[in-house]
Amino acid sequence: MLEKLRKLSANFRNTSESEPDKEWERLKNERNEQFKTFSNGVKSINKSNIDDYFNLANEWLKSYPEGCQEETIKESQEIIDNLCKTFQADSNKSKSDILLILQKISDIYKNIDRKNSKYSPLWNEIKYQLSNLDIAVPIKDLHLHNVDFSNSKFKPPAGFESCKFSGECRFWRGSSEGGFFIKSSEIAGKMIFISFDFFGYAEFSDLDISYQDAFAFMFAHFYENSVFDEIRFSEDCRDGMYTSMNAAYFSNKHDHTFRPESAFERTRMGEVTFEGVTKLLPSGAGLFNPDTGEDDIKILPRQKQQGIEPN
Image (cartoon, rainbow, N blue to C red):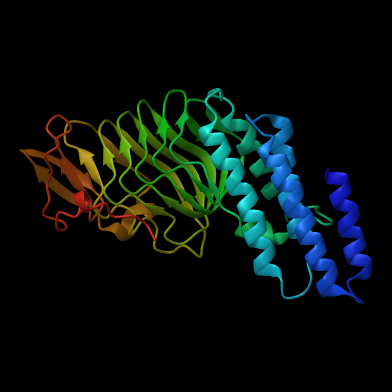
């Protein structure tokens, strides 16, 4: 199937100067029919058909006429959306199958900037909807771009180590049932943890950050000990963690560490007292009682029940 599409693409490139519209329409129809036949035959996700999904998407992105860039992105995105939906609905997927897709995503973005890469820069526009999953595997040495883990549950030993994040990676309304960590990693995009519940120990450490305003923890709740340590910002990120902790809530029964001072100095660290317990927190953050759910709501109006969603 892919070989046939490659021949059609080659024919399109060879004849596009004389009959661009006709050849493009013919190629689009062939691609769509081939994908329809392929996707209808996929019952469960495995390494082989994951490769096919990405190869089919790549055929759109690497060969298209001038002025059709948005159309090719749309067609490729629909293929990736189909993959993600099929994976989410696959009742036979194992807890480690998520790695098959994440490793393929990583392969693209580790190689996209290399000379003569087979991956078009248009892959930077593609998003991966991997929400509502149970993730119970450690994720290591991957480059994740525009991955949406919203509403997913992270279970031990899930966490991220030696990874790179770019684009916009979402963890909106997710939760961790045990310890959760992102460590020894590079943050080159937006990390959204709005309304995330850290039910276990949380660690963000040894991070190199090259994206201004990289984190958003609004209405996140840290139920146990948390550590933010060894956080380093590039020269372009002069605000540090300035807005990251607005309306984030930390347990008044546990310890919370924020280092080094240079990463948090713009947040104007200050003491917050709730139920007779005082903690040193970044400005904008509050305390809550993890046993009762009651919190110090003097920072912002009570909006967390209104289902605030990131843009």
